[in-house]
Image (cartoon, rainbow, N blue to C red; front, side):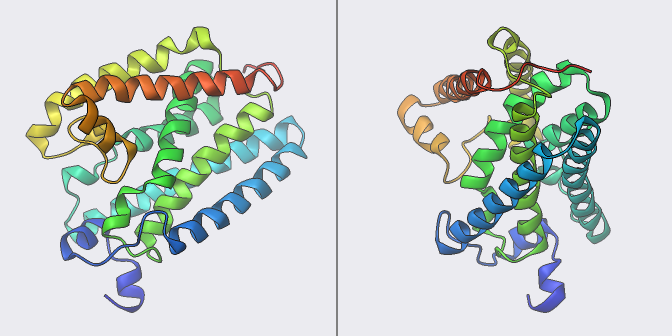
Length: 250
């Protein structure tokens, strides 16, 4: 596919067409990560220079853009007649996008308790090991949108912590843990019926460390290791959060 038609090709079409993607952690990917890191740093610097009202507006904007990108890609799929179940917005990062926007607008703390740990792990994992790398050209709307969505989620999580909007606490990790287990159980049963892999509980994400976990622990043992690894990362962010301002709720 060439030109604008190729650039705006819906993700399911790229998946089916067998177009070449890009190498995970290859030169193109690393250059993209560098650009996204610089963008995140600039956004975080802007955020820290503002008053509370300005910070809230920026958080809402950084949470609204990923939702807008997701909706635009889904509308593309619907218009092209390729809105297959695998591309429904039921992946864990998709849910995070809606959770983040709801929290940014309402400030309701339980939303942040789920959004923050899910989004940090999901966004960083997707940026380092993007599943779309195997069929999306890196310069395409689907690929650029995926990168920007996850980068903004990671930046939002950093800003909300360093700004004191939200600081993770170990005593509140039960909520994202219970939600993750519940979602995993639902999609472990539903994925085979729909031909999907929501929550990455039917099979590991290609090219990610989850593949190694599956090789070592087997199925379903790798799911226990998957959850344990996520919780370990969450605890790391709890420890990091102690160095920042106390939570400002509401």
